[in-house]
Amino acid sequence: MSLLRTPQSGRSGIRSLATWYRSGGLSAIVFALPLVLTFLYFSWSPIVRGLVLSFQKNNLVTTPEWVGLANFSYVLTDPQLPQATVNTLYFALLALIFGFPVPLFLAVFISELRSAGWLYNVISYLPAVVPPVAAILLWKFFYDPSGAGVFNSILGWFGLGPFAWLNSPDLAMPAIVLEATWAGAGATSIIYLAALTGVRTELYEAAELDGAGIWKRVWHVTLPQIRGIILIMMLLQLIGTFQVFTEPFLFTGGGPDNATTTILLLIYRYAFINGDFGAATALSVLLAGVLCVLSVVYHLLTRRWSIT
Amino acid sequence: MTDERGIISVADRKRPLVRHGLPAIQVLLFVGVVIAGVGPLLWLLKSGLSTSQDILRGPMQLWPSGIQWQNIPDAWTRVQIGSYLGNTAIIAIGSLLSTLFVCTTGAFVLSVLRPKWGPVVTGAVLATLFLPGVISLVPLYLTILKMPVLGFNLQNTFWAVWLPQAAGAFNILVMKRYFDSIPRELIEAARIDGASNLRLFTSLVLPLSKPIVGVVALLTVIGSWKDYLWPLLVLPDPRLQPISVALPRVAATTEISLQMSALFLAVLIPVVLFLVFQKQFLKGVGMSGGIKE
Image 1 (cartoon, each protein chain N blue to C red):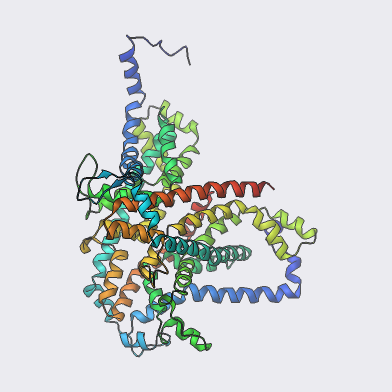
Image 2: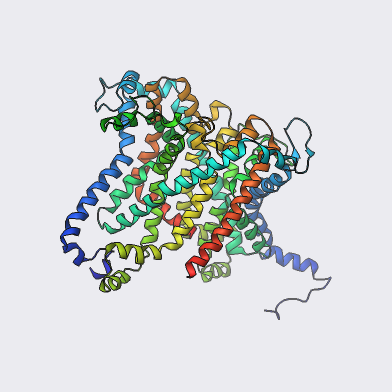
């Protein structure tokens, strides 16, 4: 190839430009323009701008001024932050407890059903196609605290309740997580199911010959083989739940008594109610930083675990 | 039969505990899944056709005192569900077109044309995947209010929803990975036959990538149908709002029976679409999980 290439000299500058053009150099730029422009406008520059904004005072009315770390100290000393942090962690924990085993169990079970599996699949995926806002409004009605509410009348048949659900500081968060689990379980179980089709079945034969029962086979053969996807889904779920907004915003608006105020709700209030964009981006940057650290630590921890 | 085995073997199925226990679990699970999956939808159907009194007094009554067919046209005209659904469709289709345009052309450059600066762009796209979305929420909103350099305001235009949707790193990387798997010989052969880059793109790469284009299209439409916070921020004009944004506002002002019929109409279309295209849906979602790995 090097023999064919003309030596670079001043005279061949125009020619090399011409060969660059003829070999499609210009059209490569034209093809790349949509991607570069949309990312420049809607991805790369907002990220940079977010970092810049967090060091500025900006309310869109007066010209922005540099304030150093003032936004961060304001956000970190906000008396609502500890409560919001605890609530967000609580949401993530509950979502993990409720939402993690259900889809996994469902997927392992469905994969055992040869012919009827698709029916379970379709039905359990139904909640995932209901638009989240419609689902939340519907569940909000289900959680009606009066004795005639849907859940309260069902529990009433068994002599339980009535419960205050969303009006109770103790029950509001579990109620929200229950809905979120209902909405998300189908989609997650489909992903596990896709991973389960890759499990090598001859290992079951070997395990059975070694005298492993059904549960042992699930625990020692099935789950280790889809460990990769389980770990990733767990991390994605954590990152998602740390940024939860729609559910608490529409169910309770953060109440009762700030029992469901999450970090993202605080960011929303700073930016779109108080008009303090500096504080909002400062908290966003902090949350993003925590999530990045979490991802790295998670990766290191699970890597060590999967080696041993 | 031997290569089709699962966790439970033929020998297991002969044991009495498994022989009776398995169908029992199966039935229990089926009932559970039906109650969770179909129950709320049936309840919504019943309530959408009931009077407000029926819904409030006896939400768990199996049969309402009378079927109020009038609720559905009422919701359509008085709550204007029709126009909100129209907006939702416009937003979904626009997001679909902008996403597909950006991610097919972008992946084509990065995977097939491979210019010298390609790896830099790939790296910059990949980097955004690792940053949580929260970091750009507020600055993105400010970008929409006043586009840098260009200076105009995109708020209350559909572009404010269509364009940011296209800047999704996940779609581009998925598309690039698929394009990477197209044999280079095919591309070289087309080049030797004198195909221009545009022709290479439209006549070779795109037709070969129908499956992945379908998956990205499906995921984009579902995503934009579900989106709430972003359209709430950039489309404050009620005439432009999609149904997700309009519903909570409507719910605060209308009587419960109309509210339920409005919810029913909002849920009906995605559910019917899902039931019709269930195979493609489930395959697409499963595939997206495989890609995450």
